[in-house]
Structure formats: structure tokens, C-alpha cells
Image (cartoon, rainbow, N blue to C red):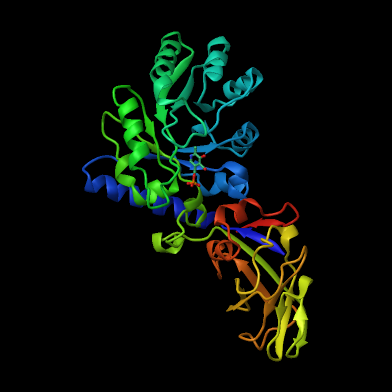
Length: 370
Ligand code: PLP
């Protein structure tokens, strides 16, 4: 089993997103926003180094963990870096300073830490508003005071730019962004600063809210779409011109001939209703393949689409070779990626989302860069 990460697909997806933003901005006679490519969680399982190579034309990179930010610098990224949750203790601020990071600030404790810190240069921040997701951020009632305090720290030479940010809970669904955007606008419209509100779903469906102007800069924060997976349950990534960046491949390691009534795998949850050939594939949940994918989950064997039968086990899964009579031991198997199926199809069959499968790629799976 191995995973291949296509740096050119990452670059292609970034360019596709940028084109979409440029077209939206042109239609609104405005300027396109800048892009922070979100590369948290080891670049959604793709590897920080691959992401730095693939997103070399992004204006910035954004992630949660300080050590991933440091890895970006070590991989040669010299551009802006935004920490999406900021820092948690004063010693983190030494790294923020040393590696020239920008940071999200979402609570008073962080403002207190910034006020006490000794920096060699000003730190740019994005002040986060909790506009309705109720995860992180200053409440609408507390935001003005936080902004005022940040502006004071700016006057004192501690902070550089102070931007305004929020995160949408429902940009991928029918609820959309209207309610949260209204809260964000009503709280922040009189305050100066860069705006950043859009994740992938909002970037793809509501890019008009991120159109910038000479006087108002915007940054979007797409993640999943840059890896060629979809943030939406009702739209495939390919429909936005996106290409899968990760391909998970293995091969058939054994073949069994079943007769009607035979069962396969743990729990015998699949029973053949006729004679059939099945292939055993070297890939299981210990590789990050979802155990909840079972009979019916799409898979591609030797270029032909077929399906899983029975349960996924730790190191193996089982596929129906009916549609692929020529397949045998050694035949290539695509679990998801370039040859199909899409990671989103597999995720849907397993009752989850593509994000989870990409992030859950197990460390034992070797990743090669293509
Ligand atoms: N911005 C923030 C603050 C996030 O936490 C995330 C990820 O959840 C993103 C942007 C990117 O989201 P997505 O992968 O849906 O584009």
C-alpha cells in the first residue's frame, strides 16, 4: 500500500480557486482576496513539505500547530503564516516572534500574553469573532473592547496589523452564511482591518462576500478544496475543476472463488448469492481506510470500477472481481484518488466526510511525492 501526493494537483487546485476568486471579483468590479492555504493536520494528511511545494504561489499558509509552522519555515516557506488558533502559553510567543508568524487571537488571555511579551518585531494578528459557531472567538458583546485593546497594543508598537476574522458553521449547507455574516458585519463594520471569513465552502459558493477593494483587503482560508476534495455533500470536487491530490493505492494479494452461500470476512456479513470471484486487497483500517465502509463502497481494480464486499479488517479488505475478470494477484487497486473513486465517495459510503479519511491516513502508509 502507498499513497501518492501530487504536488501539481495541489498547485492546480490553488490556481482553480484563484481563478474563481478573480472571476467573482471582476464581475463585482472589485479585487480578488488573497489566499491563506490551510495546511493544518499535516496538510490534511498530505504532508507539510508537499503542501509547501504545491502551494508555493499562495499568498499565505495557515495552520493550527506551531510545530507545523516551524516545519513550513524549514521547508523554505518565507511568506506569511497564520496560526488559526493562536498560541496557548507565553513560551509559544517566542516561536511566533522567531519564525515571524501571524496569529489568531480569540480570547482575553491571549491579549494579556501579547501585552506582556517582548518581541523583536511587531506581530500581525487576526482578532476572531464568535459570530454563531460557538467554538472560538470573542462574543459580539466583547469584540469592540478586544479590538480597542488590540489597537492600543498596536499604538504601543507590540502589534502590527489587526484584522477581523470569523469562521462559518454552515457554509456547506442550506443554512449558508447569511446569519453569521450579518453578525460579523454588524459588529465589525466600523473597525479598520483586513477581513477573513471564508473557508472552502464559502470560497466556492459565496466568493462575492470576499471581494476586496482598494480600501478593504480580504483573505480567504480554503482547506479541503485545495486537496481536491469537496466541502459539500451535494457537489463533487470535480464539478469545481478540482483534482484529487492524494491517491491511495494497493494491490490484490489473494483471490478466492466463492460458491453461492459462502460468506467472506469477519462477521460473515456478506454472503454470495451466486458463484463469484473476490480479491483480497492489502489495505485495512490500520492504514486509515474507514472500517465503516462495507459492501457497496466503490473501488477501482485494474482501471475498472467495482465494490467492496464484507467488512474491512485491520490489514485487508475484500472486493468483488465480477466486473474485472482479468484481475488476479498483483492487480493494481485504487482505493481513492486519481483513478477513482473520489475520497468523498468512499467517505459517503462510510458515513463520514473526505476530510476525515485524508487526515486519518496512517503513519505506516508510505507517502511518495509525484
Ligand atoms: N479556517 C479555519 C479557522 C478553520 O478551522 C478551517 C478548518 O476547519 C478552515 C479555515 C478551512 O476549512 P475547509 O477545509 O473547510 O476549507
